[in-house]
Length: 260
Ligand SMILES: N[C@@H]1[C@@H](O)[C@H](O)[C@@H](COP(=O)(O)O)O[C@@H]1O
Image 1 (cartoon, rainbow, N blue to C red):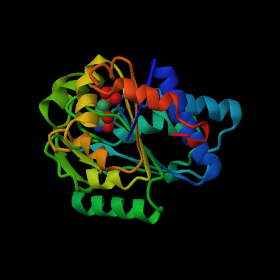
Image 2 (cartoon, rainbow, N blue to C red):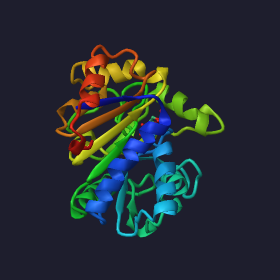
Image 3 (cartoon, helix red, strand yellow):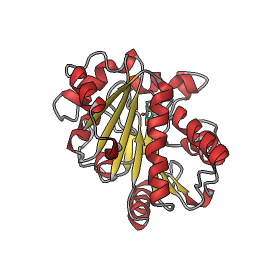
Image 4 (cartoon, rainbow, N blue to C red):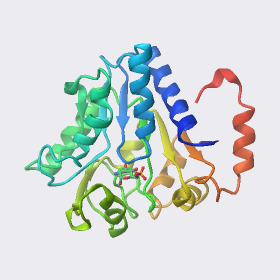
């Protein structure tokens, strides 16, 4: 696990976009794992800028979303399918036919979850997965107590997550109780994961996920088992880390050829 502490959203977005750009230059038909929430938004804006300005090409990219609410009507502005389209894929030349997500409206949700996992496998697996983290440690929507080996399935949201996400809806009562999410086992199979966390409200969860025990009570701690996990944090989110100075020292002295 590599922890990189930066001064704010802009340098975090630039570094994550550098990793994605390097991947696309090496592998134009790469498979990206996309996340919602506010943390990845500056990365999407930076990629849209590079597409406009430098011609960064997404025409052959395949993309898989992490999660989706169950039961939101098709086209609901807060469905993650709509958010991913609005915030990212329609701002670059990513073919909508190449963007997949768990289906929160399927008549047979377990069957559609299996089909989604099959589609990721058929695409050759995710090359680079962007992640945020919930204040309760959820990855995707894998709430505390999720099996560390879980696959795409239905989960019930914890009240804290519904309250955190109510800001995107008219009121708390409009936030669905159920979701479909890639499992922690699914996420662990991505070849590189980049998790972004900013702000003081993420300081405790960042400490738990980076320096706490690997435990289902903090689902994101499972990333300690990942062979290539990058954690990008700002100073506020890093403020409870015990080894912050060591992470800074390691990053400052990293050989330039190494990349993220
Ligand atoms: N399902 C998403 C997560 O994938 C995301 O990581 C989390 C944190 O969001 P934010 O980045 O806005 O703090 O929000 C939602 O619950």
